[in-house]
Image (cartoon, rainbow, N blue to C red; front, side, top):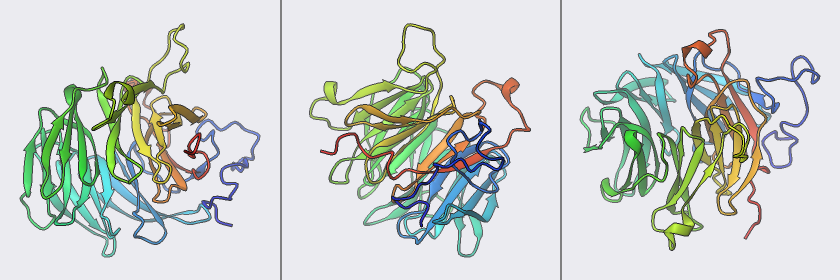
Length: 368
């Protein structure tokens, strides 16, 4: 029986190494642990595209490495390969055919990793660390988009040492997402820029931020016709904004919601407020997952404006998350994000990547 199939009892039984009697604070949801996780904080996760048979997971870390695992149907994870940068890896993505993985690093370069030959070569260069990397597949071109702390957004065709195009941004790139023909970049000083990618990339619109605090993560969502129509933006202040590009009624359709706070929506008592570290949309249902520095993940239905589930609290922050191509697997990474400074850093503490069956829990509240 397939562990990630829709009918599985995945993640239900307490099958901890020491039996199910101990409460396990590093894995309170009893999810599948990925073998050989990185040796330092995990910055990014990405599953292979639907064009590839099977499921492969890529993870980048502050140990300067990027790793690839095969995730088998029974939940076993097999480490396949790894590549190194000379600085922390901040972001990673796949080519649409699954043959290449792209990595962005604090060493100011981006690399293209050919999984068939297991060779990695530099394909991009910035004057500062590269925070975001995305593959763009357009009808008339394909390229890699890199966003850097040097305040530029560059586009590379991977064969030339010079970019096809370089666009100036008002501030450093903090996070980005691409769903053709749309890209969105969130920058320092709460900057927000939408780009259109048809024919060639160009700035489409600058948006006043719907959030009052520093941007941390952004994810584009699609409409019923599978076209990108807006984005979810997360901040360090435990809040997510849902923002449509051209809504019929902006005042009503755009909204923000609180999340990753110590006592939920109770506003009468003081509460701890945590950063939203990553947002990922379910590829089938259009619902979303958020993960935070509070060590929890939550699932949300933005259309019904309801929370579907919140996890138990892990003993360290959740720093990254992603769904596989059919939405059956939710991967999330548990590692220290330095949100409480160096005095809370414990080098003895392991980092983890967990896999959870997401087929049922992300179904929308009321199917229209």
